[in-house]
Structure formats: structure tokens, C-alpha cells
Length: 479
Image 1 (cartoon, helix red, strand yellow):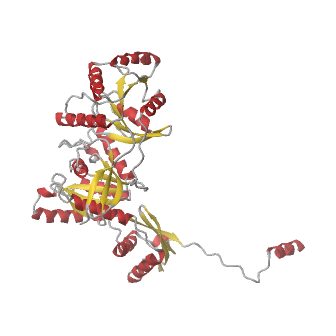
Image 2 (tube, rainbow, N blue to C red):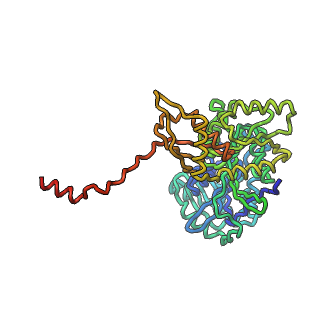
Image 3 (cartoon, helix red, strand yellow):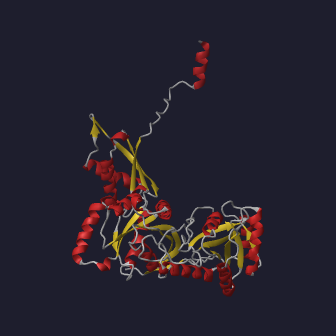
């Protein structure tokens, strides 16, 4: 087996961490600066748990912006003590890695004892700090925000993440306070990283798989369903046989059935997960070996198929079941997920690390299948042989005729077949031809899209003895 390993992507960009107590608008400010609704914004405290990051460019300077959970969140029904502790650890990691701290306060609440406690912690860290007093939506609140100057930091800015007030001035100060950006490493890939979304039901081990691959506690893991809420993008790289490949790993919230979504936070979490499928290049559909293949697994697999994304089926917790259950599981997998028969299946254990190397190898293999290109002559030869073996369907005595085909696109692999009657190019026959293409070219893990199109009409060449245009005009005038 080729040697391979996962490593964190060594970013040369300085890191700016947004920190503060719960419910001061950190995620709203993060979304405003990034220009997208990435982090979930909600009135309930403690919605953000993991570190959410995005690259930002302002006036020609780029940096990585990180949103963090609220410091001082108390354990509750939806945030047990272990989750609160893990979220605080994520904040501490962000502070340690940051080049600049963007401390966020609430102009409506003023300075609280918790604000003063957090300010003492930030001063001990020795990191430069800018204070952004959020929710300063009017002149009166702007004047109240000056109270935050007693926290002991030199630079204070009043902003409104909701309306965008004061954000430009804040960003000018941010880029002016950052160190010079380091040069990109010489081995930096010139191609865009492959985006891999890890999707599945709640509690199948998606976050555990992320941490096992990265060999660090990058995202929070807990037995409580719905621990992961935002879609967490983690840049990383693999090195195998001296070749470096760059990826963005997307950890997502568990996708529940619609009638089982308890509140608006979980609703937005599910929507973030579904959008992660749309924006990824490769989806890892994670299943629970103990629970077997469920109806919800089938629905999520259908989302991947509808989005026409490359797919790998990852069966987690494989170390917990015995040989008789394994055979039963595989039978259920083939029966329920029949429409993903093109997706390779990998059995792993995120807890023990068993077979993760094989998963990395399969990721590289599917990536090579995604980049495959088929020459037009070879493509047409394979299709002609398949059509001769099983002729196309006919209707009212008219049979579909195939003329030629082209490989139009790779993401997904799209083939355009020129025929005489597109209405006779039925879905079952498309499936038959797709199977023929897979048999000859592989395309493992990749969906295939076949489009029928009417052959363009050929323009007959002009006869040499045809009269010239001028002669015809003269003849018309003479009449």
C-alpha cells in the first residue's frame, strides 16, 4: 500500500480570532465581514461551538477570520458540561494561534463582569486586541459604547453587524495591525483544493472521523445528537509517493428527517449540511455499522445523487460488529442504496483508526476517476459496440438511431449523444449505456450524466454551376 498521511494545511495568512461572551453578535459580525451567511446566527446563547473559519481579503490584504463560541457559557439542556468545556478549548486554541484578537462586546448591555474577566485573560495572552462594540445601531448606543474603554485596550470601534455600520473602519484597523503575510510555500498546489463533505445522520461518527483523519480535536465530539451545528471547513493536505494534494474537509451537522427537527437552530444546521453537499466535489456518506442502513441514509444518499456529486460510502464503527452482522449489513447496503452502486464502500473505525489509510487511498482513487478524460474515437467505439449488443428502443415502428457522442464535461462526467429522436432515449437505456461506459472506463465513485440531442442539420454545399448572386439580382431587375 502506498505510504500516505494527512497534514494540516500550512496557511501563510495571519489569523484574526473573534472572541467574546455569548450572544454579543460574534457570528453576525463574522458573516458581515466574510460577506456570506456561513455561521448560524440565533438568539439562543451557545449556538456556535466549533471554530468556523474563512479567508477574507480587504484592501489587498488577506487574512483568515475565525468565529468562536461564547466564553462563559453555562451548561444547560442543549449544551452539557462536556460540550461547554470543549467549546472553551476551541476558543483557547484560536487565541493561541491568532495574530490579532477581535474582542466583541454588546453596546446594549454595556461592560459586564464577564467582559472584564475575559479582558484580563486576553491581556495575559499578550496578543494585540481590537475592541468591536457591536449593536451600536444609533448615536445614543455609540456614546454608551465608550464605556468599553475601561477594559484597558487602546483601540475601540463601534459597529453594527446587522446594518454594516462601522465595519469598514474596523477592517482598516485590522489589516493595519496585522504582520506582513508570509510567502506561500514552494510546494503550494496551483490547482484549487478538492472539497470533501462528510455527511450522514446524527451520531454516525462524522466529527470523530474528521478528528481521526487530522489527528487532533479539531471539532467537538459528543454523544448528544446535533453537537455539530455549523459546516466547519478545514483545509488540509495529503502526501503520498512524493505527491501533495490539497483538500478542504467539510464537517457537517447530522441531517435529520424533516419531522424530527426540534427547533430553528437544528433547521439551519440541516440546511447548512445540505448546502455543503451542493458546494463539495466529493461526498463521504458516513453510515453507522451498528444501526445498519436506514431510510434516512437512503434520503441523504439521494441528496448526493441529485446534486450529481462524486461519492464514497464510509461505514464507521466497523470494529463493533461481528462477521454475521457484516454479511447482513452488506446485503442491506446493496438493497437500500442501489442507486449508489457506482460508489466504492470503505469500512473504517474512527475510534481506533482502523482502515483510515485505505480511506485515504480510496479518496485519491476517486479523485483520479473524477479527472479522467475519454477520447472521442474510443468513446464512440464503446457506445457503438454496446448499441449493437442491445439495440435502442423503438416506438410506433421508429427506432432511435445513434450517430456519435462527445465527452462534454467532467464535474460531473457529462456525455452528449447525438440521435435522431431524443424522446426515444429512455432512462433505462441511458442506464444501460452508462453501465457500458463504467465497464470500459471505470468512473468509480462518479455519477454519469447522459444527454440525448438531435443531430445538427448539415448544410449542403453549393453547386458549382449555380448562378452567382449578382446574376440573380440582375435577372430579377430585368423582370
